[in-house]
Image (cartoon, rainbow, N blue to C red):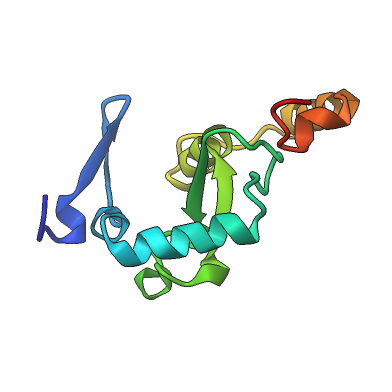
Length: 123
């Protein structure tokens, strides 16, 4: 929807429609450049779990709440798709994090050999 206002861009999840305020931003050359800077700064790893697979750049303060910070590098973080999806669901009110599950995932991650968190796919 080129030229559409933010409120006209929508995404459907499980039958629920959510406005896509960032859609117009994500299609710009400026976004592509700042996205690359964020991934470089975060060393090409998810800042939440350390994964190097399926990386995305997330707005810490969502564009719907702070459109003036859409291209602000300090408002961006690199996340894997799983962490990004989880955080987005929480932001839109579709779930809250379970502390017990978080503790379990952290314990499992700590038990994994170091090579899984380095990003070296040949290790």
